[in-house]
Image (tube, rainbow, N blue to C red; front, side):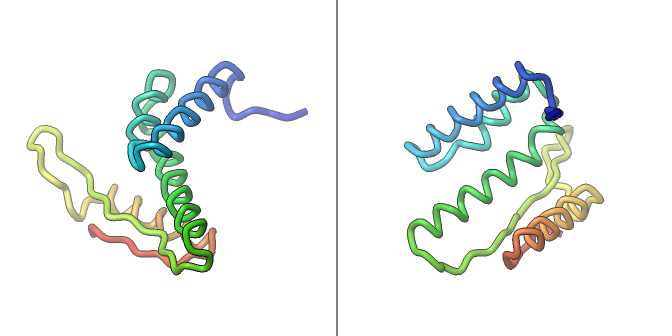
Length: 120
């Protein structure tokens, strides 16, 4: 028997949010991540939403690049930093940033794509 990662209703809601955000990205060219995180945060904590949405955003961009020009060189990358919300300051060099950068490099290795990580 197939075990779903979340209840069926939640899975359907998440699928609807991702589909609607994909339509917006198709028309506008941006906004997928913002809409997915905002829509899915109604059901799941943002800490559980952001990593898979980041991966979807990068893979969608790589797919669009390949559809535009087959065999175009691509890089799986990120320029990310944490924020101190009290001071509204970027926390460059934080432990969380190092973990996110390592995860980005591991995902690139998994998809056999060169990677670039900035922000350490």
